[in-house]
Length: 258
Image: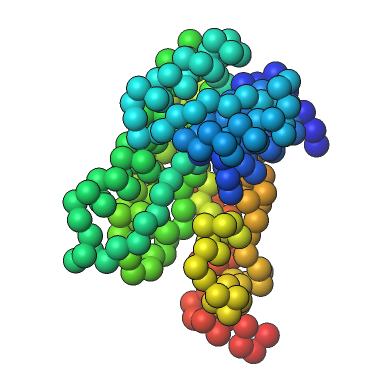
């Protein structure tokens, strides 16, 4: 199927790499004019150039800065006249054990992952209410909502918070023709996941997944595309887990006896 987002305008935040890039690509492929928001101007502009001026443009913005978020949506309206879809993918995940974490570490993760999500939603809601149509799609995670590893306390807390925010926003906005949903990626093969990890460690990650492989950014982007499309017009307040079955096994030797 093609053209699922024809004549739509999408803002994708955190699109300069990884999952965000794949979301921007899929939206543009399906007909949306896609505004790429990211603090990495070099990669963000390169993506916009690759997608082409008729399908995309770039705006430099740091999601934890309120003035940047406001400027991003002002730019979107001036450039395209409206905003139909928000895909908020920006997030950070620095590791720190709870007893070693500083308040600055904790607040920085929340500023980007949680407060940034709130500010992006708040900025586009008036635009969507005025047109009685909108799609909000947030990148959450299986971390914090279903599983967790040591050192991820701040990240896990923000992702669980995003899921709660999705539900609250969905209830508030349903009467305005706006849906609010999210995707929960598992282990996705990105530069961020592989950085500093050995081939053996990555292989062990693959073996822990029933489908036997890591996910790709495009796997997640396809789920985000569905939630952003009119095919999901009666779906709100929920998330799609994209993890190859990672959270399902009761034990590590789930293949025993098969």
